[in-house]
Length: 301
Image (cartoon, rainbow, N blue to C red):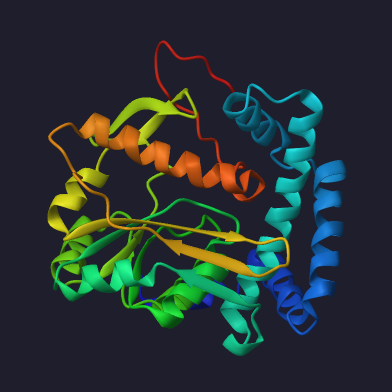
């Protein structure tokens, strides 16, 4: 099926509700950010109390990862996560459609680490994870630095179209997650590639390894990509209490990869865990991180 036919299908009636919802978020983009935060608060309250979308998944993830917290503390963190998710929708659509100078303040710490690695003429794996401010912080990052991305289309084709168009517009290169050859070409061409291995599935490059001490399917390919690139550089971003954003690019990992792919993957998990602990409500807990682990592991969802 050609691209024109695909675009026509997106206007069929079954997609009208999605277009209408995106239209509302587009119009909300003209409101002050304080109003958008208030709307996000209301949306989070509605989804938490009425729709209850993925509440069990979020609760399960938080209880597994933070066993030291009480039920009340888990509930407070889960509610804060829903508000972060809702606000992330306003951030995402603003990043897609609003002028860059209308976006909130941000700061990038450690850009010299990425620039130094790129100056060597080799590719860079920009190691990160899935946070609710992913899209807006990615827009900030690519506005100032030559960064490409590895992406996966959402299940909704209308949302996938909007996301893909944005990423192709702002990144140095956009590579689909299952295009291994495209990823290798990008690294060999010297691109820095945004890479988040924290939503793994069972493949030849995965193992069951601890994530917050809980067995989880873990991507072990990061080290292999590091062999093909010039450096693996951790990068994490978070939304600050004053509604600004801090993007931190860390020094390139030393002694990485090693001959032990399992130990390398555990090291990556520990890096992601440390970033999550700085702002736990902003991590994407609605994802079933501990699903499909196979025989011998309980089904927790």
